[in-house]
Length: 611
Image (tube, rainbow, N blue to C red; front, side, top):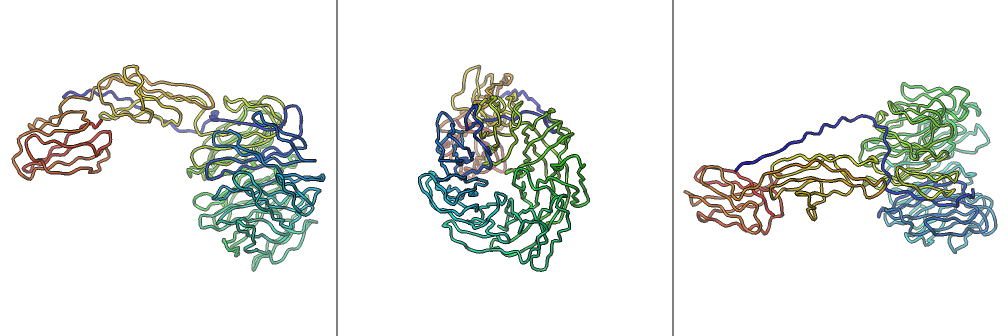
């Protein structure tokens, strides 16, 4: 049988890219023209079902996706829950019945989809959680637990008066970890019961602040906890002393504390001198090799490993940088976030596919991420960048093309290739995320992007036997065609050709930037009625549906055949009983197979297609 194959070769050159990422969806909440939103999206949490939580706080009603939500008597925190497609599911509210506010800083979810909310009672001793009023203590951090439907379950007053600065909350090992006092961190179970506390042994204040302020946490792969704090005095933990030798005007050290899941001390290190983060959190993440990354604002000078970054005195807000430590807290390097004005990371995240770290925040001027330059801006603009684990940039892009004052304040992922960013919309200009415009609400924004670009790549077909493969990989809608007609149900990266003809494939984005691209037509002739190798043995029909026949003169009563799938796995083996042997194919799925025939010390292999 004559076979004609047409081959296409696709060469990929991988280099850092300044390209717009495709936002599958984006949304906002607030009110157009009314600046009643104070924080925007402070944090994002994703539950096991891929639903997304974020927050906004406002002194009036908010609107989101054509729904209006009233506030309490004063500033109210609105907790929004969206499904994986960006549709609003419900809103919970936490506020005060008598003035003041409950300012939310941190969100965490557990394995059952419950939500834990960390916030601060600002000028009030009571809070309303949906319809329930509870005593919360004035100017104290509180933790509120809601179920997956937004129903109030319990709240816990941490008794820590952080003045809104202590924002650390971490869910890990089926427990919640939080700062419980000026010199302590507590561990609490899912029922709100304390299970252990870690205490700093001694602290000598260098300022009016009575202890370290913990501003983030992360988890090592063995369940150990890493806590990051700003320190304002001398810290003593067991035999380790962190000396405070910084003039208050020159910033403060950042302390990294490692404990095991029983809150037992492992090590502590500090690096200075840093500015207290303008966005409250210390950006922090740990990679799959237990290496530590943190975002800092270098106030005067900071040395990590063999590298030092100094801050010119004209930049009062400090120099933005990313530092890397090993699992023992020893410094490896520190890299500046380069801009001719300012560039700061407000959040970090290890990529779920273990290909690097995501860095997000805001910049002014001309920002450079390796060879990638983001356009000059006079007012702060949002950015997202990805770097490998040595700090080499792989990509960088602006979240919105033109809207200023929209720094990314939080970033999260669902582990399936979808990433979520959130921040604040500070004006009533219509924001556009890639090709997706959203309501110009002055409030929060939330967007979902992938690592695909906002343009659809042109597919190329490569051929191996009857197997057709479309490249590059594409997670949008794929459709195969034969002689210009749709092949029903063929919507994957590969196709097994079952008849001769002209094959093509198209890619289509059905969310975000709507676009379509089609391959060139490939003529494929792979199918004959009979497969023979010249030995007198034949296999037919090809393709086969229910039965396959082997014909020929077999000399041995021990003649056998074996059938292998396309990856070489043996799926059938049996004896050949006569010179026209019938094989039942009902147990085989559709695809390409190889049949191996053995008779009188001779072995032949041929291919066939099961429809």
